[in-house]
Image (cartoon, rainbow, N blue to C red; front, side):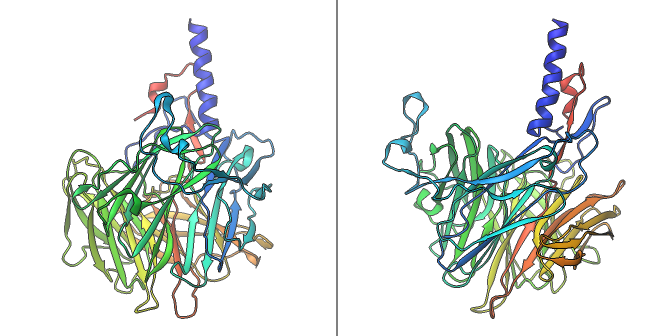
Amino acid sequence: MKRTMTSLIGAAAALAAVTGIAAVAAPGGTPKTPGGAARLPVQRSALLCPPPTSSDVGETTYTAFAPQGAAAGADTKKGTAKLLPAGTVKDAGAGGGKKKGGRSKAADTGRTVVPPADTTPVVPLRQAGKPVTTTTDRADAPALVGAADGTLAPGWTVQQTTTVAAGAGRGLLGLSCPTPDTTFWFPGVSTATDRQDYVHLTNPDTTPAVVDLELHGKDGSLGGSAGEDITVPPHTTVPVLLSTLTTRPATNATLHVLAREGRVGAAVQATDNKLGSDWLPPAADPAPSVVLPGIPKDATSVRLVALAPGGDDADLKVQLATPTGLITPAGLETLHLKSGMTTAVDLKDVTKGEAGSLVLTPTDPGAKAPVAAALRVTRGKGGNQEMAFIPATRRVEKRATAADNGARGSTLSLAAPEKGKDAKVKVTASAGSAGGTPVTKTYTVKGGTTLDIDPPRPQGLKGSYALTVEPEPGSGPVYAARTLARPQGGVPAFTVQPLPDDRGSVVVPTAGQDLSLLTD
């Protein structure tokens, strides 16, 4: 019996390194490494990119990157990383209930899976430290599913950047392709008539996934069974128009994506009749305190959308981390969130011409009610406005990366939200996709402030490059976001990508160690 148990524990250690099982920490905290355990790089990562656009005047660039310098103990075999086109479910929508045997009715309504026209791998990556890019102008570009292994798995990232020149969806859309999971929160969605929000559900696996979509408005659940039992076939994507899930239009709502069978990747593409379009990435897992980094200094309008998804209300202190310190936005010292009800607050031009990050903390330090939150940020005026989204994000524990930076148009925001806890951060500009030598600089962010920087660029840059953010030992908590600005005539087109920790390493037990020690 003892020998069998030891073998099982050793197998669990190997599984953790392969799949990315990590030690669990309290929200916003630092995972602890139990005595005798080791922190090792993951050996396999998965990413999913939704269909970029259906516009005939759109162009999309994919940029893949993996940071150099895998942690000690990494599998040194040469890694591979690539994405493959996925199929698309046409006329996708709600499942409407389950049949015997676990099949969703959606599988029997005549909807068909359209296979991709081309199965050539997209942005295959063969070496760490140098981005790879490709561009398409296809209006029917498919979703992508893929994985990285070996030395390319830790920190593998793919940026999807789309420019739409005209039409209701005009603007700049950016997304760091998400990893598959079983639950996602999207504060800031809308089912109003002036918005068309699609959630794209992509299944990376060989078995079907079954997903429920729940919408919460200002009065609670928006009700109905239309979002239940949506079947996502293997290696396919299912787009769902959120306004079809409810008969009660809501300007500000929160979407909860829950995979009850299998796992999916999820992202929301939001198109506004006046403000253009962009991707709304999933917010960080609900937590008592959240940080939303990287509000542009020239934002003309900022809207906060938040939800307390647990059984308790949440009372929050609202602060803005500016370049000089924490301030309270005028007229909004605290925010009360009723359980299960989405609250929206217009902060207007809250940054007043300075960079900022929104910090939400419990008014009672002992309160534990979790919160999900996101910002809709607008730049420009009149008919030349453009919107983007900033969801709450995880702090950078070890490393975070943003790909697809050019010689101009990138801004890196670093927020150290805790007063008295300065953050010291190493920022590395990678080699360029077509040439250039990496450059590294170190920045200090005073506790309670946000630092916006014109990021370092590779020497002799050719093509695009990636930015990698790494807190130095002893650094205070730090959160990061990257803004891309690419004006289109008079429209200040932009997109913001939060930089959560890449979870490129995990804590695994040694043989014979009690697995219960890996959770806090």
